[in-house]
Length: 348
Image 1 (cartoon, rainbow, N blue to C red):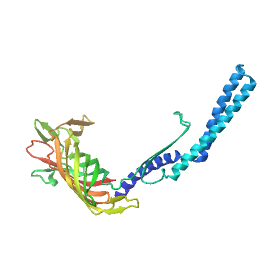
Image 2 (cartoon, helix red, strand yellow):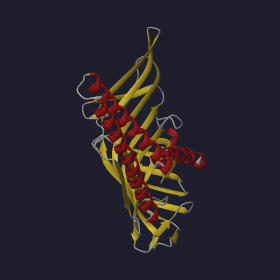
Image 3 (cartoon, rainbow, N blue to C red):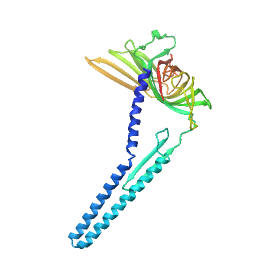
Image 4 (spheres, helix red, strand yellow):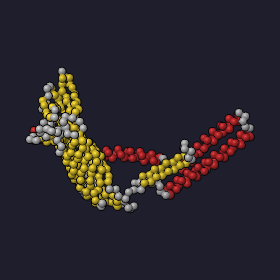
């Protein structure tokens, strides 16, 4: 699963990068194509000038000898234009190649060529190069996690939980930053960012949640209930300390890079954030017809959420567990706390 996920994501980015590289390569014409373009433009301009001279001649605004003289002067001007513009193009491209302003490396390069553009520039060549950082201490990652979800209830074991173990699950999606804590060691990393938690409970035994004032309890459904699912959505800030082995690479140009790809890792930390309104979805039969009903309200859920989480893994893939210290519902006689276990993927 780890390799498949990585390959799919990397393949997507590879296609995008290849398309961008192709566009950049196509934007750098060779000398012959520049000569051909310049010659074509000047010939078209000469044709327009000759047509204008012929119009003057037909209108008897000029004599035949004057028309021939103007045509000869226009042809000589366009020939010199071709010679000058080609020389400029050759000199500028040779300058760029000689100073290696355009090269395939890790730097960011912007290269554009303008020939006869609307801005009246005969030939424009622009380069912009950003030198690489000697040391990059903070990177970013895409976070995706999913797995099973349930609730820890005071005095009730997981085997006696009112929620189905197989049908209840969680999904997490977020964006993280990873900062090296020590200047010359990548053993300890601080990972933080923003993510969204979706926690779903699949309720058993034809029960569903009913809000009565400040109490939310499970009650039997009066009818033919097929399924009852309860979902909460949270926007949280996760913070973890990540430990693990690493490699250091020093490049010829003095750059230093620290890597922990394909290495064992352990992460310990937690999260805090806000809960959105909850959604309860009921599916039942009424008068022989299938009915799906969605109820979106607070259900006395906590406004704030916080908890602890940890993961252990290798490379991008980890075994992931999280536990909400804040109960699902506030001010209840019996607290219920979400607990989740699943697979976590951190993609650089």
